[in-house]
Structures are given as C-alpha cells and as structure tokens.
Length: 70
Image (cartoon, rainbow, N blue to C red; front, side):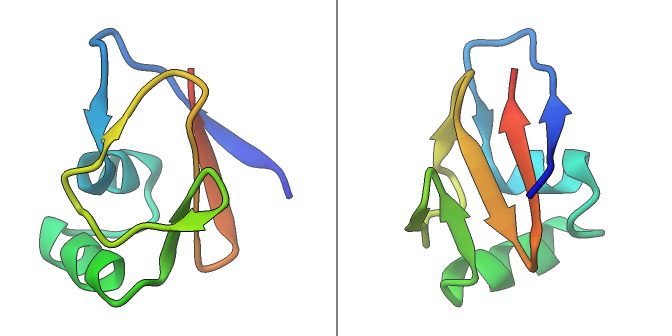
C-alpha cells in the first residue's frame, strides 16, 4: 500500500483532523462515525478514539487508503 504523506508543523494532529486533511473523509462527523465504528487503524491496530494524537511516523488506514505523518 502506498501511504500519502501528511506534513505537520505542530507536535501532533488529532486522528479525525488528519483524516480530513488526507481527504479520506469529507467532514468531521464522517470521521467520528468511521472511527467509532472501528473502521480505522493506527499503526496496525484498530483505533476508536477520534481525538487520538498522531505524531511523526504514525500511520493510519481507512477504506484501503493510508497516510503517514511526517
């Protein structure tokens, strides 16, 4: 799988915000729903916390699409 690179300037980005930035979802509400339904993985493990803090090197996958924080 090819991972889209998301560049951040801050120390971290929340999972729901990162999904919107990566274009995997169109709204925060959609992100909340798919995260709470267990459809998103972070670093290979299912994550149900939409406020999960992602830092450089963290990878996430949803619906066959992934991104890595750089």
